[in-house]
Image (cartoon, rainbow over all chains, first blue to last red; front, side, top):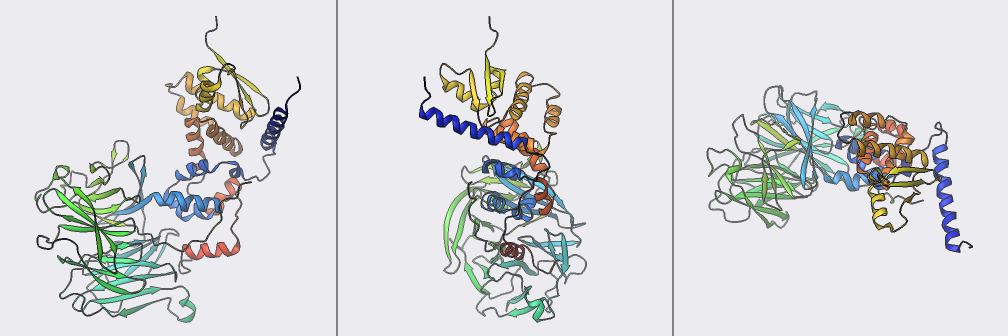
Length: 407
Length: 151
């Protein structure tokens, strides 16, 4: 019986596949063949996901276009990173990367070795801003990618030392002009604001690569002396300081160098200090506002310019989940949200030394997990006096790369 | 009396391998083919995989099906992937198409470990990956990455 046309063309195709794969395997090993091109995208993604976020962000991205797309558009979007640092003593720090895997959180820790001993004040993209512990007017910038750092020029006005909370200092990135800025806010009234602009192209024009400038803060901002601490950064561009006022925040758009007195939503009457706190969530500022013993409302600042807040969740912060001497007052302090905006990691208030400090709140199910494990049965060890510094990614303007062309 | 059913697997280059059905079922792709195959499902074609690779895959499945709780399973796995890169990539690809999760995890992890801690150039050299960025794009990337200050 004669083979049909269909059969003939199928045989032809089979022969071709067979010849290609045999040729591929028989190619002499010395020939420099890119083995990766034959692997489908799913395998590439599976392999790259196993690399530490740092290797991906600072190295893997730059290997070739296919890796750049896979890493930028899929893998890195799933990470959140923060640093846990001892607030006294040797100031040891370690970096934690959090990823959501199958509705649970996965933590990876890595110790950091930083040449400058001091308090890490801010983390923007790959740069850490550190307040030197010994010489308290000095600021040190450290690049996690190259593992190099340098001292920055001192700010001309003294705020009493960046190491303490007498001033609010942070690091931002202007993606359009490709420059970093150190924002230094202190005192009041009037509020003082000094900005250190770090602009590489200025190297040629001025002998100084970095210069401080003082900017005017509108006189109607703030009536008294403020408490400044480290601000919450949104998108590496907007900074929000909780100045311990019952009805407003001080906010700044660091690209436009414009200030806002952001009024807080909801009723003001019962709001006292220490009962509300702020966290960045999915590109917006979120307010966690305790309204009664067990409940807290979560509000999102949708529009900074027009001061528009939107109520998003009602959290059940039952104090069964943490030991508390003052359950009416204490509230877990949110550290960071995991990038998919479903989970928030909180620090329990004032735990005794024997207990772990972190808990995870799942916004979808309202469930709380109190033992955050790095691997099975290994709980993340945290001290009651640890500080947390969350990484803020300021988007840079990406190169538009074409999708991988299929051969 | 046949004790257990056997399946014949045929690679892209025509090599055939007779294996116990239980071993073949370790591949979810083959399991699916058998379950939906009908009467003549004793010979299964695997055109995405050559004979050399298929024989290694079968060796893996055999060990994992016949002695899943043995103490030396871990050392078997470690030795199993002590092969050159080409074979490793073929194994990854084969385990992907044949849907053998354990082997895919093993190969992916081994390949990933080859990249950890390496610089961009070293990563490219490991698998001879071509740098397909244009000079203009490389310049943009370099600017994005860090200032000229820290050189």
